[in-house]
Image (cartoon, rainbow, N blue to C red; front, side, top):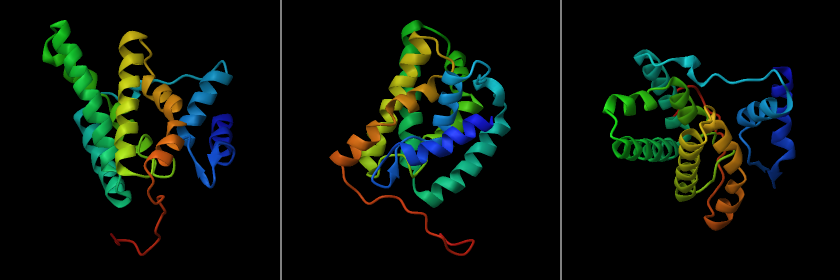
Length: 186
């Protein structure tokens, strides 16, 4: 655990262009631990599928995303991923309860609200964030359904993090900055 934390923080200073790091530190720590240590593992189902997890994550995630203005990234990721799963479900002739089961994961919601939206490591421009989130959704879908990688969201984010640099060049916009004010501002 200490290893993952140190690697995560170090990635902010090692993998950057100018003064912007492009790997999500938490994701970098998770992937590094999975690759470099024999005892690391991730349990995507640990959050379960209870309705109150969705309420808790959506409520807290919603407050944070409202503050940082990154709902577009979450909506693009979840929308694209849900659409891909719906097409697959329809093609395979499965009942829709299978579809809902695929989407009712606390881990998926936690990822979509807190990890894929890190304002310091995602593209700056709105269109770039949407393109990037859709790419992550597509790669997640492929890894999960064709390679059966249960931790696909983490691998997809890790693999596509460097794309942030290119998207920031193509679509230029001002970089996110934390604005510190009194509690209750904004």
